[in-house]
Length: 168
Image 1 (cartoon, one colour):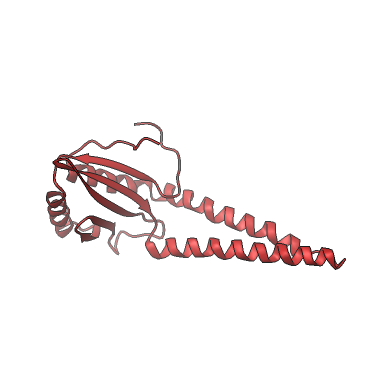
Image 2 (cartoon, rainbow, N blue to C red):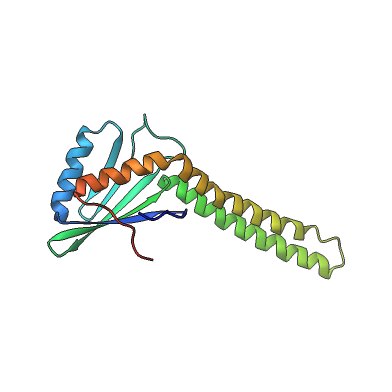
Protein backbone atom coordinates (compact mmCIF):
# COMPACT_ATOMS: atom_id res chain seq x y z
CA UNK A 1 0.00 0.00 0.00
CA UNK A 2 1.36 3.41 -0.89
CA UNK A 3 1.99 6.06 1.70
CA UNK A 4 -1.33 7.86 2.12
CA UNK A 5 -1.36 11.61 1.90
CA UNK A 6 -3.63 13.44 4.31
CA UNK A 7 -7.06 14.39 2.96
CA UNK A 8 -9.94 16.16 4.68
CA UNK A 9 -12.29 13.19 4.01
CA UNK A 10 -10.22 10.07 3.23
CA UNK A 11 -11.79 7.43 0.99
CA UNK A 12 -11.10 3.83 0.13
CA UNK A 13 -12.78 1.15 -1.96
CA UNK A 14 -13.24 -2.57 -1.58
CA UNK A 15 -14.41 -4.97 -4.26
CA UNK A 16 -16.20 -7.91 -2.68
CA UNK A 17 -17.42 -11.12 -4.29
CA UNK A 18 -20.35 -11.03 -1.84
CA UNK A 19 -23.68 -9.57 -2.95
CA UNK A 20 -24.81 -6.43 -1.11
CA UNK A 21 -27.53 -8.32 0.79
CA UNK A 22 -24.98 -10.76 2.23
CA UNK A 23 -22.63 -7.94 3.16
CA UNK A 24 -25.47 -6.12 4.93
CA UNK A 25 -26.38 -9.33 6.78
CA UNK A 26 -22.74 -9.70 7.95
CA UNK A 27 -22.51 -6.07 9.07
CA UNK A 28 -25.83 -6.35 10.93
CA UNK A 29 -24.63 -9.52 12.74
CA UNK A 30 -21.30 -7.87 13.56
CA UNK A 31 -22.96 -4.74 14.98
CA UNK A 32 -25.28 -6.82 17.19
CA UNK A 33 -22.30 -8.37 18.98
CA UNK A 34 -19.93 -5.35 18.83
CA UNK A 35 -19.35 -3.32 21.96
CA UNK A 36 -17.27 -0.70 20.15
CA UNK A 37 -19.10 0.12 16.90
CA UNK A 38 -22.68 1.05 16.14
CA UNK A 39 -24.33 1.71 12.84
CA UNK A 40 -27.24 2.62 10.65
CA UNK A 41 -28.08 0.16 7.88
CA UNK A 42 -30.00 1.07 4.71
CA UNK A 43 -30.41 -1.03 1.55
CA UNK A 44 -27.47 0.57 -0.27
CA UNK A 45 -25.67 2.49 2.49
CA UNK A 46 -24.09 1.81 5.87
CA UNK A 47 -22.99 4.38 8.42
CA UNK A 48 -20.65 3.25 11.16
CA UNK A 49 -19.59 5.20 14.22
CA UNK A 50 -18.22 4.49 17.67
CA UNK A 51 -20.29 3.73 20.76
CA UNK A 52 -20.62 6.29 23.54
CA UNK A 53 -17.89 4.52 25.54
CA UNK A 54 -15.41 4.69 22.65
CA UNK A 55 -16.24 8.01 21.00
CA UNK A 56 -13.95 11.00 21.29
CA UNK A 57 -14.23 14.46 19.78
CA UNK A 58 -11.94 13.35 16.92
CA UNK A 59 -13.49 9.89 16.38
CA UNK A 60 -14.19 9.06 12.73
CA UNK A 61 -17.55 8.31 11.16
CA UNK A 62 -17.57 5.93 8.18
CA UNK A 63 -20.12 6.20 5.36
CA UNK A 64 -20.22 3.11 3.13
CA UNK A 65 -22.02 3.10 -0.23
CA UNK A 66 -22.76 -0.34 -1.69
CA UNK A 67 -22.84 -0.56 -5.49
CA UNK A 68 -23.63 -3.82 -7.32
CA UNK A 69 -20.79 -4.93 -9.57
CA UNK A 70 -21.30 -8.18 -11.44
CA UNK A 71 -22.02 -10.93 -8.91
CA UNK A 72 -20.39 -8.91 -6.13
CA UNK A 73 -20.36 -5.43 -4.64
CA UNK A 74 -18.16 -2.36 -4.89
CA UNK A 75 -17.86 -0.94 -1.38
CA UNK A 76 -17.09 2.80 -1.50
CA UNK A 77 -16.09 4.12 1.92
CA UNK A 78 -15.55 7.69 3.10
CA UNK A 79 -14.26 8.76 6.50
CA UNK A 80 -15.35 11.99 8.08
CA UNK A 81 -16.09 13.50 11.44
CA UNK A 82 -19.43 13.14 13.16
CA UNK A 83 -22.07 14.61 10.79
CA UNK A 84 -22.92 17.39 13.26
CA UNK A 85 -19.26 18.33 13.62
CA UNK A 86 -18.86 18.27 9.82
CA UNK A 87 -21.88 20.57 9.39
CA UNK A 88 -20.41 22.93 12.00
CA UNK A 89 -17.08 22.94 10.14
CA UNK A 90 -18.69 23.65 6.76
CA UNK A 91 -20.99 26.37 8.12
CA UNK A 92 -18.12 27.90 10.12
CA UNK A 93 -15.94 28.02 7.00
CA UNK A 94 -18.77 29.60 5.05
CA UNK A 95 -19.32 32.15 7.83
CA UNK A 96 -15.62 33.04 7.90
CA UNK A 97 -15.63 33.50 4.12
CA UNK A 98 -18.67 35.80 4.27
CA UNK A 99 -17.22 37.82 7.16
CA UNK A 100 -13.89 38.15 5.34
CA UNK A 101 -15.66 39.44 2.22
CA UNK A 102 -17.68 41.93 4.29
CA UNK A 103 -14.50 43.09 6.07
CA UNK A 104 -12.73 43.47 2.73
CA UNK A 105 -15.61 45.51 1.27
CA UNK A 106 -15.74 47.64 4.42
CA UNK A 107 -11.98 48.20 4.29
CA UNK A 108 -12.12 49.23 0.63
CA UNK A 109 -14.94 51.66 1.42
CA UNK A 110 -12.78 53.11 4.22
CA UNK A 111 -9.93 53.58 1.74
CA UNK A 112 -12.26 55.36 -0.69
CA UNK A 113 -13.40 57.70 2.12
CA UNK A 114 -9.76 58.36 3.13
CA UNK A 115 -10.29 56.87 6.59
CA UNK A 116 -7.92 54.45 8.31
CA UNK A 117 -8.79 51.11 6.61
CA UNK A 118 -8.90 48.92 9.71
CA UNK A 119 -11.48 46.70 7.96
CA UNK A 120 -8.71 45.41 5.70
CA UNK A 121 -6.96 43.87 8.72
CA UNK A 122 -9.92 41.59 9.46
CA UNK A 123 -9.90 39.89 6.02
CA UNK A 124 -6.51 38.13 6.45
CA UNK A 125 -7.55 37.23 10.00
CA UNK A 126 -10.53 35.31 8.59
CA UNK A 127 -8.24 33.50 6.15
CA UNK A 128 -5.90 32.53 8.99
CA UNK A 129 -8.81 31.20 11.07
CA UNK A 130 -10.12 29.22 8.08
CA UNK A 131 -6.63 27.77 7.56
CA UNK A 132 -6.41 26.76 11.21
CA UNK A 133 -9.81 25.05 10.99
CA UNK A 134 -8.67 23.22 7.85
CA UNK A 135 -5.47 22.13 9.60
CA UNK A 136 -7.51 20.85 12.53
CA UNK A 137 -8.96 18.16 10.26
CA UNK A 138 -5.46 16.71 9.85
CA UNK A 139 -4.85 16.82 13.59
CA UNK A 140 -8.14 14.97 14.08
CA UNK A 141 -7.07 12.35 11.54
CA UNK A 142 -3.84 11.83 13.43
CA UNK A 143 -5.65 11.45 16.74
CA UNK A 144 -8.28 9.15 15.21
CA UNK A 145 -5.91 7.12 13.02
CA UNK A 146 -6.16 3.98 15.17
CA UNK A 147 -9.96 4.07 15.06
CA UNK A 148 -9.85 4.72 11.29
CA UNK A 149 -7.59 1.71 10.83
CA UNK A 150 -9.90 -0.50 12.91
CA UNK A 151 -12.97 0.57 10.94
CA UNK A 152 -11.20 -0.03 7.63
CA UNK A 153 -9.91 -3.44 8.73
CA UNK A 154 -13.38 -4.42 9.99
CA UNK A 155 -15.00 -3.51 6.65
CA UNK A 156 -12.32 -5.43 4.73
CA UNK A 157 -12.81 -8.48 6.97
CA UNK A 158 -16.61 -8.40 6.66
CA UNK A 159 -16.39 -8.01 2.87
CA UNK A 160 -13.78 -10.80 2.68
CA UNK A 161 -11.37 -8.77 0.55
CA UNK A 162 -7.98 -7.14 0.53
CA UNK A 163 -8.63 -3.45 0.13
CA UNK A 164 -6.95 -1.08 -2.29
CA UNK A 165 -6.67 2.65 -2.78
CA UNK A 166 -8.84 4.05 -5.58
CA UNK A 167 -6.83 5.36 -8.51
CA UNK A 168 -6.76 9.13 -8.71
